[in-house]
Amino acid sequence: MSLLFSLEYAPVELGGEGKEIPTSLPCPDCQTKPVGRLRKHANYLRGFTLAVGGGRIKVKITRLRCSKCKVTHGCLFECLVPHSRYGAEALGRLATQYLFEDKSYEEIGWEKSAEEGEGHRHLIYSLVERLCRKEDLISAQAEKQVLKRGESLWRRKEPEPEEPCKNAGKARSEKKAAAMNRVKVAVKKFKEGTGQALETVVGSLHQISMQLSAPFSLFSAAKVSVVRTTHKRGEALF
Ligand SMILES: [Zn+2]
Image (cartoon, helix red, strand yellow):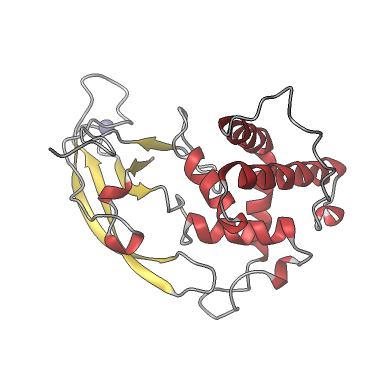
């Protein structure tokens, strides 16, 4: 299972502070107590595409290994996606284009290249599929943002009818088409609730999914284990 660290431990290339990843943390995989401790196992460079149209950058990834069960864990950050070479924001932007614009899979994404393979058809298909499966979660997060803004439920004005998702008509089933429409409405609502730019909303939803009580990646469905280090975010240093 990937371990999720807060951004302060991320390399500067990812917008972090490059703090040393702590060792001797308890292992999340050990079945019997006392659980093993995590020690540094390896560092390696991995290429990531973080922005649509941006190049690939190399980022140092640390792996920790349990002293007892010997399982190794990659150290990740919210802006990355487990088992993916793409950053959360880049994937979010791709999915948003498919949900909001009248573009086919082939028309979205990066230029095709030998390195990238055959475009992004499968990538975008699987992203949209994942979002549709987690439509409940996305809608709930959107509602939460609207409430946070202090809008009273009973005084809320009738919502204007939403335009359906431009690509919903291509879905193979009515169920999928309906889910795409609901995801689109929820993404728009989340955008309005948070005041974020539309292109960054799906990436933000991914970051939220990585911080839930049972954290997982909205884009890859992989479960992650959030590491709570003693240094809390926003804690005053003096
Ligand atoms: Zn272990």
